[in-house]
Image (tube, rainbow, N blue to C red):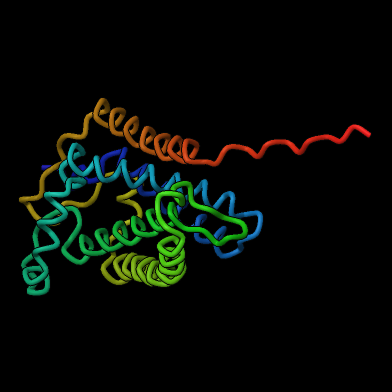
Length: 231
């Protein structure tokens, strides 16, 4: 029996790193504002595509990427705190962290699609809701970023604790896809074929294209040119 197991599949690992970079970049561009708000919107669409990919990959990906596994782990907090957790993949606290991160980022994306600052940014789906609703969502979008900062901070603190105290490199596992087998019953991840990844990627790209298309359909027609005066 090998001392290591296959843990995270390649599509999940690519998603993880792209997601982290895209979320942080979107937060920075949003804070700086001004001309960078154009990039804030573009990065928001990228994050939307990544979220759609992760949602679907949770149904067709490999063993430890699946929602059934993550939701099952999230329900095992008592067993984990009692020292009886023996499963590979996310432990219960890690599973709760994943759900919190994806849920919060998902809210930020949806609210951003409907938000406006009346100056430099208008979400592509802004016209779907009333002005009052958009203003309300814009306020929530701005406030929720602090929750996101807190969740990211906890995530990084947990990684540091596991690396420095538990001597368990979560970063290495997310790069190489393999982790040390800590209990005999832990098995290699199964499933997550390439054809499924390509199909899910196509659906994610299609979702972003659909959002942009709806925005184009709802855009007001260009103003008629002013008449020229022939003196």
